[in-house]
Length: 335
Image 1 (tube, one colour):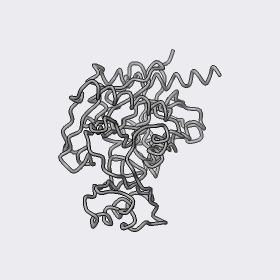
Image 2: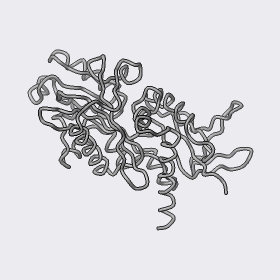
Image 3: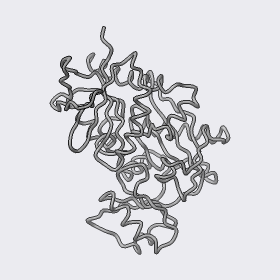
Image 4: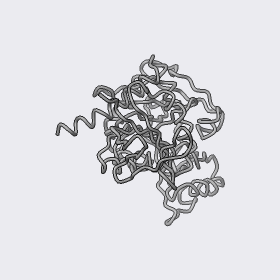
């Protein structure tokens, strides 16, 4: 019996492609080649292709997401999605794989699209009783003057591109005169911007996944950023201190775990998801900041730290994610 063929997709169409390629190194090193035949697929604005070991590349047949190699046609059993940003994290690629009938390791198209939009994320979360910060949703074609924003929200605020991740284009605004520049910075990354009130508290981030039909929360991390907040350089250039597992009371830990599991179920998540929270001790509540449906997997990333803190090897963790994806295919075949 042949091993399942897994397409590992990396790259992407956005500025987050550089993070995808960082994650790709870790994922490729730890996907179990004894259990799966793994084929790397680079998805770029110019081409979708499989890089050959001796050099050169083979283009993907987008009609059915297959490869035509010298050894014959390669059709895949599942896809491991490692693309941060569009089209791997916003639901577009998921919708394509649904059309060609391929299961994948991330959330489905609807969940991916909703969670990629920060405003829609907090709106759905708030409707479900999850604590979120007060915010305003701005559009480039219908700008709102900074003075009007400051009448609705209390400083300090965070200004961030509404779609996207890795904290690219994000600013913390302490004074009113800083707001206009922060808006311009965010609008360079996206046509929509979220302005969100600052919530004081401890910053926690937690990985959550499903295995054997059970939602599993990983030991979560407390972030101590050298910068004003957990920005790109803090995440990927070492300018933060991360403690995993977080040193906190069991009461706080259970609160964060319970909230994370609730969010995972509310959004009908699949695969590994990382959620960012601020825990306000005065309110004794975890406030959801955002949901990352394709969290970073580089050596500097949070999820690999949490997997190891949970006593697991990355190889076993990735195997669990792939098996969950393969189970989706089996379930569809039985329907």
